[in-house]
Length: 227
Image 1 (cartoon, rainbow, N blue to C red):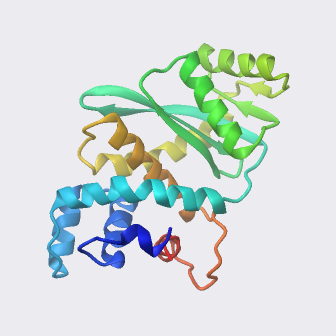
Image 2 (cartoon, rainbow, N blue to C red):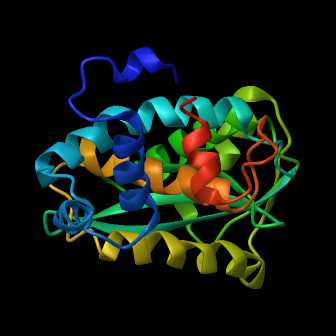
């Protein structure tokens, strides 16, 4: 991100980034962020904070993707439920055996097509895994088999329940943040917000290469992405 991305804003870059970071890092609503800023003498409407999250999260994702460290070749994949306007949606996620986040994808359905979209995205961003552990879902199994057949690959498929404990536990950190947000209004805003949460989690896990070695905390690394 460059300084030009903040050109024309009525607020300093540091205020914008802090508001976006708080929202993506902690279980807070937009109104909570509005109140926290007001306590610091900064008057910002919660709707403005929402616009900042939608605008800057994709830009921050681009920076983080550039600096993301290589993940392992043994993946654990699972999906969890996310409610959007009273309707359940599905967040596909994968981590490696060291619990490094591989990738994620919010979908409206839980089926072969959605699972395959996730695998294509994850492989495109991270390279081909040697093996993927999944649950007993026939859709997930069929999706990987289809990918292997179409691309003449030989990804090993395992369905060992205890191996997926690591990704199931990792879901909890994402859902804890989501719970404090008091619900999503649209699929697009949910997708952007979940992307931001996942990005901050990657920073917290130490998955990002940083140039400024003095930036040690999750917050400082986050802010350094916009220098």
